[in-house]
Structure formats: C-alpha cells, structure tokens
Length: 323
Image 1 (cartoon, rainbow, N blue to C red):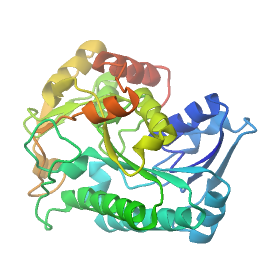
Image 2: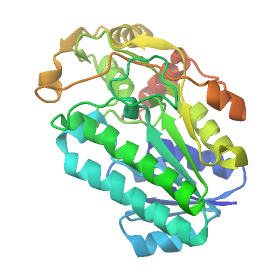
Image 3: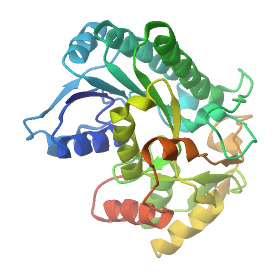
Image 4: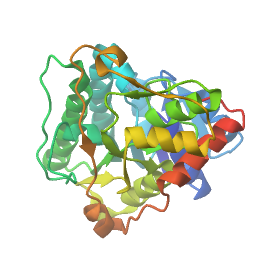
C-alpha cells in the first residue's frame, strides 16, 4: 500500500510514518512545517519507500497529485495546541476547515479512503462521562475563542460524514484523547512535555487553573496502532471512534508525578487561566473516553500506562533532544 500523511512531519504523523514503513508500506508526507519539524522525519529520508513534500494542503493542485498516487490518506494536518488556538483563531479555523475540504474533495475524485483525525475537544463542556461517540456535543459561546478549534473539527467531521453518506467516499473519523510521547513539543501548550521540560530544568512546574481538571493520556504508539488497524478495517468506514486511555489523573497530580519521576526540586506553581491564556478562558473539568466501540471494532486495548508515557518523554528529553 501507498499512504499519504498530511501533517506527517508532526508529532503523531511522524510516528505513524515510522509504523507504516515498518510494515513495508510506502509513505508520502506533506507538511508545511508550521507546527511539525523536519527533525521528526530526518531519519526516514534514507528509506526508498519514503518521500516528503514541504508544502501545505492548501496547495490543492499539488495535493491532488499526491492523493492520486496513494490508496489511503491519513489527514492529520491541523492547527494544534490550546496556546496556538487562542493566539491565532483565524489560522485555526481556516487551516482545519479549508484543509479538510481540500483533502476530501481530492480524495473523492479518485475514491481514496480518508482517515480523518479529530479530537476529544469536540465534546466541549459535556458532563456525561465517559464520552461516547454518539453523545451530544456541548460547546461554549462563540465569543470564547477557545471553542473555535472544537467547532472547526466538528465541522470537519460533519463534512467527512456527508461525503460518506452522499458520495460514498470511504471515511473513518477518530477522536484522539491527549496523545503523548517522544517528539511532542510543549511549544503550543501540550501539558506533559511542558511539565517534563520545566522539571528537568528546575523551573517552576506551571499548573493552569486550580489543577483539579482531570485527563486521560494516550501513548502515541497505542494511538498509531489503532489508526492503522482502523484504516485496514472495512467495517470502520463511515464511523467515528474514540482513541484513548482510561487511566485518569488530575493535572495537579500529574505535576507531582512528573516531579517525582524526574527527581526534580521544581516548585509547583498554579497560574490562573486568565493569565495563562485569555480573559474568560473556559476549560472542561474531566475528559474521559468510552473506548468500548473501538474495542469491539478492532480489539483495541491500550498497552502503555501513564508511567510508561512519562518514562518515554523524560528519556527522550534527557537524551539531549529538545522538547
């Protein structure tokens, strides 16, 4: 098989490229390096079954050529990270919606399967825990820029499912829950690499809000394994799946655990949301996935716990690789 990965020089995309090449597939990556890094795919360049293009999915003519040459598209290109979303809402909305439009339109011309990566953010302020794929979405007011990302990804999902229902384009939608691992950067507000970097440098570990908000973290290896299995499953077409882990922890407890595992002397410092992001910033108190649907579909069971994730991120940073 030949796969196209949009956003393939990013954190998840580069891990996905590695895994597909390891299964003897051919992989083409397109990335504009706005949030990805050539460093993430540098080691893949010598592989004859790998090629990359530094460009954007907004370049529709080029995208069309790349789609023509593959059998399946993993669409990962998107604006990522709460910090980027708050600071650049126009870029967030345009990148997510227009980029997905281009991918779906190009794929439809040649009937290529599309695996669309969405996010747990679409559940918004929902309180029915755990979050089920068929549950209602509850987003905040439009004057809260924080929800523009969730809304744009929800529109991506609606559009992908419309292509499936109306045009029979094979699509699979996945909602990723806090995917973490080596090569992830804290530059755009990702909490685990940020905490690890702060702890190793002896800087204060900054917990935003009251620290009682609870999250579940997924190892990128588990996420990638699930993505590939869903791409290979004919029964997954036209459906939405959560990919996540059920091990829940508060952000304050996460900061303490990172401090313990790095043997850091860093203080844990709480920062109000208004100071960290913007006035009136809203967050959800819990984000826990229901993974029963993906378990039934492909037998998905995450193999890596939170300590495994932290060990890998800490090791990656201690080996001198910048976070």
